Image 1 (cartoon, helix red, strand yellow):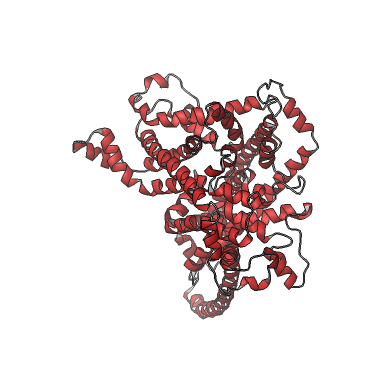
Image 2: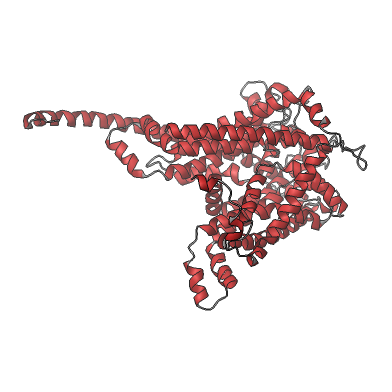
Length: 304
Length: 303
């Protein structure tokens, strides 16, 4: 095991490489270098410059000034808080909902499985870019159908996207609509991968639903559960469109998350350097969180 | 535990009784469970389809003002296709659709072609630096696109590629290529080498054997990668909105976004028809290739 982990550079010359076959990957290498790593490198450099609309042609290196300005700004703690509420709130709702629905749909002998599975596929199948804008209209205070329904039921309409206290909740709920089908399908696949003998045995032993869930399904899926949760968290952290299209970070900055704020800094306020600095801070935080989560879930594996 | 025969005979009826009692109890529970499940699933089903149902209904309604929204709009009354006529012929929808198809088709075709070559190559040959390429690809998945958009914009500006078809196609191709080659390589790794070796014995050259045998065999992953590569640019605003400024080169996503922000003025019902016309093709595509997409996306999670 140890020898596998250490890099052995003499290997590079001993191994019989297919030097000619490099031609297969030249396009990929070109793209990686010119369209990915070169821009990222330049971007990191830009984050240390005062590149903005005023210094568009004569920008200069200003060291950590952008980062210091961001970290000391009054908006920064709020944006971090929003990003965490957004990612944790979404993950905490969509993963369990997907799992619960997968359990319900996968019950033995349930009539109409295919029908329900098809219905659930709708939010996933319709392009999110469009459904998000549909939701924006449905949640509109004056014209939205949701407030219309509330009024008809005798409630007062709410400023779903217009009030700072409610906007984030609305975002999370719309995101739940958008993402739960994916988790339902992923968990369906993993539940079906559990050997059915285990369930037969549990039935013979007189296990009820909850005991089967606790003793068989959950332990069998613990690793996948951890993985899907972390994956969902990362994806939500970087999920740009729901926030961008529904509230645009507003009202004021009450729903700005790191990635949308980075975009606004760059393309609305035209402070490109600051914008990239925000994105880089986002990556660094995410990286730390992922490493920590990985450590934690590995500990979980040992426990089982 | 040792038990005498006597004991067993005494206990047998008791077991049976208990089992019988338990059985009816469980039957009742399972019926309640089924009913509850159906109720939950129906609620979730309505929740799932409601926005799409509502937008289709709005697009077919001839009531022309959003201010007149009322509960009765939730039921189908009489249909008119006037909104569809308006969006198709009074707005530059068809131009936008044409642009979108140019961007999507070109970037997908180029990206997937190179991804097939790269994926097969990386799977079958001992390419120097292969590990480095794989690590670079993995690291890239962590980066949000914003980091890339700004420098790419400057880079393309100096190359005079901003606001051109080639420029945006190139940018999209780059996005599609990396992820697709990764997917295809993973899939080809799982295919046995026997077939291509047999084909080589039959007189094909190595590269001929690879492509003639492996491309048909990796059809599922190629379909999946193609759809993903196509769907991304189709609804991309973040990149296109910065790269394209000439109105005649707008894509559907740019058009829809500017309509939603009020930059392009459009009646709400026509806007709904726009949403349906733009979304429905991908929606149908998704259902047609449901099998490939669902398995593809669920497997991609475990990578």
